[in-house]
Image (cartoon, rainbow, N blue to C red; front, side, top):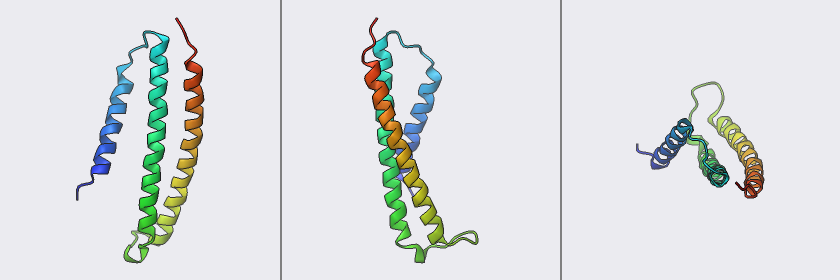
Length: 112
């Protein structure tokens, strides 16, 4: 079964991985500011992705009677745990977003 959402996330992940290996130093402070803007955007989008996955887990959780588990823990317990952990990820990303926005704002004051 095709999963376009996953495929797009995988493409985005690969693009980020490639960007990390570029290692091109910023030519001026405005480039650092632009890069920090991209970080803000990535964190905010990632938080939205986690929200979508959390909703998907909640939908699955509503239908756990139909699901099985490959260990001694029930499918219901696995989905409950996953939902809780995804909630923690959302909280962490929200805090990271606030910090990234503050850093981005601070970098707006840099000049050559």
